[in-house]
Amino acid sequence: MSHEQLVATWISFMGTAMRKAYGLSRDQYIRLAQKYRLIHFLADNYELLHYYDNNYVVDDITRYISGQGGTVQ
Image 1 (cartoon, one colour):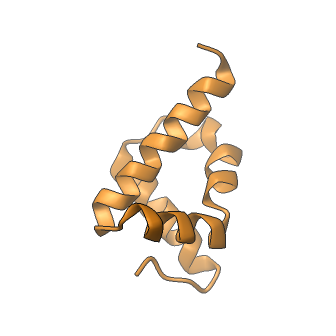
Image 2: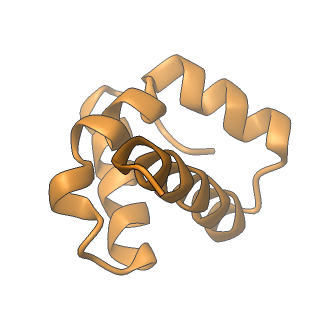
């Protein structure tokens, strides 16, 4: 598997972790991801974040959204 495939797979897993943590539907998550550019955030921070467990990454994504004045709900 190429590095790009690993990153894409990890981003997908983190999207699922966010959805499960907050009870979001796919549509709700997609809107959230688009609004706050979560795919870019995760791709840009993959080298650091992929070492951490899912709960830490979900918390970090939540902090990132809050830092932009947003909320997950």
